[in-house]
Length: 332
Image (cartoon, rainbow, N blue to C red; front, side, top):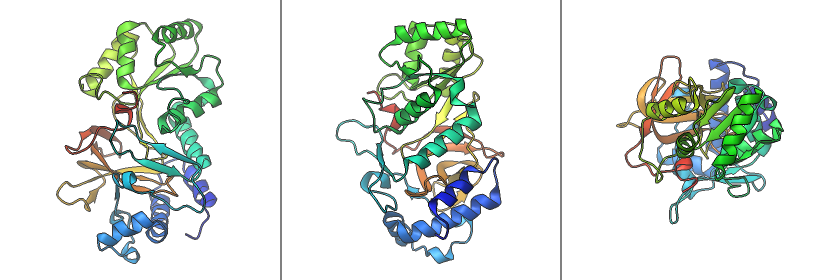
């Protein structure tokens, strides 16, 4: 790779809108870099019989199955990683490991993306229905939330998973005082709050991160959002799409349709031919996250999705053989 990591990251995060030419240029440069230096990715494309020198277009780049993060230290490292994020799991279940070479890079992606969708952290009181940072310091979602809280600096910021009554009082106080609030939570915990402490929330954005497995029956997103909007007197519920293996997040601001930051793109692959990738339509979800400079920018997930004409996407569910993961198991 001719450019330094810092030069690449500066290019990535200076993208204020979707730039197809620059995106493809950086993606192809990162592909060649990983094809040569990333042992796991190099072996993967070798097994496919793909030669790196023959890849000249975005739609030719092969995507690494997300399961490879369970059995390999995926990435290019000149020094020990600054953090290792683990996917949630139950006893005996293999966990994905994302070895993060640069937390500065993670933070750049986090804050730039948050600013694009929600504005400045300092404008919010940030409340979380998640395990605390001390309990789950290896969770990328908990790390993300803790960083946002630190930037916000509000006195009532905190993790309230086992303190629903206290959380309800803080929400009531914020509503009465006109304090702009962001409530981040796993789905089942938000539903529990809605059942036990329904109240009208003013100046509040509720951001659900998914997570029902083992705690409640699975429900369509529309039904979940209807219950939450009714309990909290809100017009809409926001959602986050992220995972351990990515440094970036996609967000829905209330319609169940996710949008990506300019340095992140989604595609769908065909079930009968995983190497055939489309920019629109239905299929298994592939993600290019250019912020994954050191691990792998090209990830084939186990989620099913519908990508719309404007490149936004809707998550339809999981592939039949996919394990429960992430927020689904974080607090089980």
